[in-house]
Length: 268
Image (cartoon, rainbow, N blue to C red; front, side, top):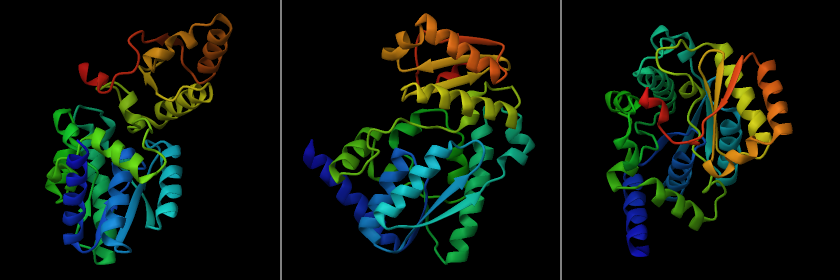
C-alpha cells in the first residue's frame, strides 16, 4: 500500500515537472492544496496559485489559501469572479456549476496568458468523476489539465500524502461553494447566499466542523455530522439556534436526521 502511494506521488511529480511552469486553480480545499504543494515540490518557484474570490465562496477558504501559499512559499494571486452576474448561473439549473467554472477558468486563463504560462491545472480527482459535476466539462472545454486524475489519485490518497508531508488541512472537511445550498430550480440571490454564510458560521462557532444549511426559501434545513445531531436537540441550545436563524430571515428551521451526506442536493 505504501509503495503504491509513493509510486503515485512519484508519477505526479514527474508529470508536473514536465510542464515546466504552471498556474494552479487553488480553492483552498484539500485537493487543490495538495496539488499546489506537489507542484511546488516538482517545479520550485515556477508555480503560481490563483484563488477565485466571490460571495459564493466561504471566506475561510480564501484565508486558508493565503496562509498555505505563504507557508509553502508559492506566489499567489486572487481574482474576482462574476458568476453572480450570469443569468444562466442564477437560474440554478443542474448545469449551474458549468457556468460558474467557465467564468472562473476564463479569469485564471487570462492570468496565465499575462504571466506567459501555458499550463493551467485544477485539483480534480478520480472520485470526482463519479459525481454530477458539470464543471468538469467546462474545464475540459477550456483546456484545464487534471494531473491527479491522469496519475490516479483518489481523495484518500491526497489526504494521506498531505498528512505525510506534515501540512495542516489534511483532515479539513470538504467545502463546496455556498450556491450548492440552494436547491436546483430556485434562483440564486445574494440574500440567500448571505443567509447561508451567516447560518453556517453560527453553527461552526458551536463546534460543528461539518455543516450545511440548505436554503429552501424561508426554510432552513440543517445538516451536520451524524454523530453530532444530538448536540442540536438540547432544549436551551435549540431555542437559541431558532432565534438566531429567525433573525437571519428563516421562517422555519429543520434538522436533517440523516446528517450530512455529500451530493445530497442531486437527489432533487
